[in-house]
Length: 180
Image (cartoon, rainbow, N blue to C red; front, side):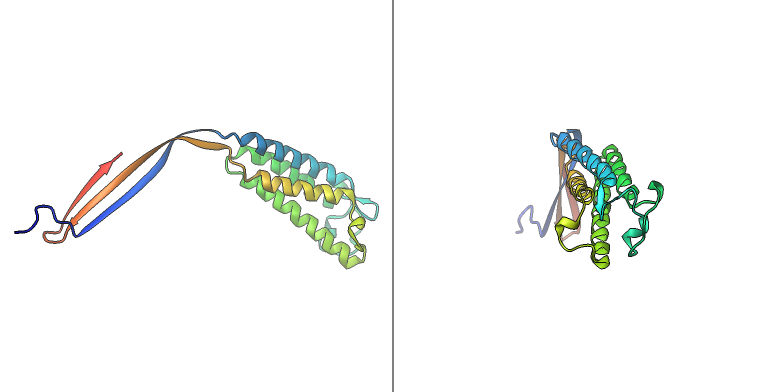
């Protein structure tokens, strides 16, 4: 005689979902890092970058051309980093922080491209040749990148449901039990 309840296959799955969220204690850190990054990026845009020239006076072509010269602010390399600061602040409106991280990454790319062009022009013999404005752009980019990773919300209540499926191969019956 066979056992009354013989199982050939058992499957158990668990699903967890957030029921309620609250502001994260890290939200203040994210705001502080992001605001500091935006200030550094904006101020760095108007300080000296290389050879006594401010980022707001260097042509935007300085990122990819040697000896690109100077330009008005709306066509300058500093405009890019100033926009990065504004975008980092705008990123505070979104929960995920992706826009703040993106602004930080773009600022770091701008810093790197300027260093590459300074090296190609022969204007980079050491760190003393990098102007204070570019160092502020680097610091602002790093702060924005880090600040974008801090969470804005946390889960304060969760619901877990368990689905238990019993398969009996003899008569191909499936019994599912759900517990919440």
